[in-house]
Amino acid sequence: MTEGYIELKVLAYKLRASFYHIYVLFHNQPSINQAAIPSFSSPNKGKAVDRSSIRSSPNPMEGGPVQLPSSIPPGLAPVSVPKPSASFLLPAMNYIPIASSCFSRASILSEAMLSGSHPLRLSVKTEYSAYVYDCLHDGDSSRKIAQQAIRDVYNAQEGMDDEMFEDAADLVAILGKFMKRGLSSSATSSTPRVASVGTPETPRANTRGTPNTGETVVPARPSPRVGERR
Image (cartoon, rainbow, N blue to C red; front, side, top):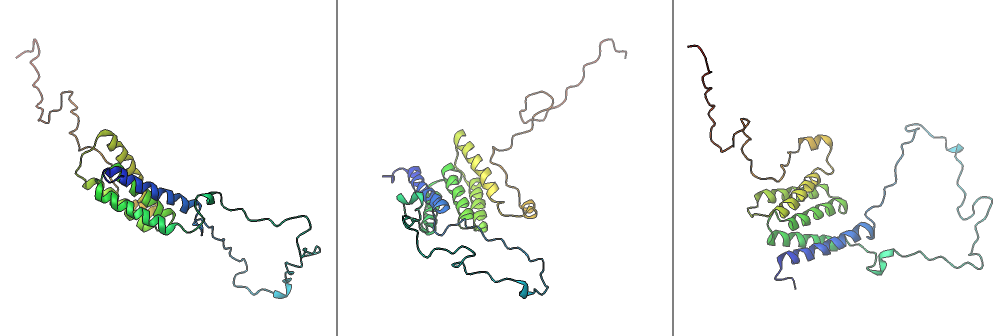
């Protein structure tokens, strides 16, 4: 259906990758956002600990003064663990391989069918860079994707209208921020600054008030004063 429409074909693959991107973020099993258990340093590090003063923990099944019941109280049915809210669409599973394949396919199609400065191609690269950083936790690859996308913009020779130019400029600004994600302040300051997308440099405005035609302006000679003595 989209064979004759290049932009629609790239957009269809991008939307599919975006769909799985959402599932990886919020519905993936195992979850990519599992918080690590914080480790606390012991104040008595390096000192011997008197183990005789440590009381042994009771059996969790025995409890303390109150014993845990060996069976469920009468009249109460066992509680089933609720399923994720999005399970009616797709089951909870590991969607990272599918999402990575979709993003790779969308990126290859955008490079083959669209110019380097096309907003749709930049949109694919922007989300691809975000996916690699947030879901795969690969900062180096994410920054390389963003950097290469910006290089392709400046190497592109195709023209664009004003609306496409504004969209491309906004996406290049986002990609420029993605190039610095995960870097320390010292590394960020040493990173070469990415120039913004703009028109070729125009001649400086003439401060003399005359139209700037690119020619050298020769200052006019002052006229002799009226009544000046010779």
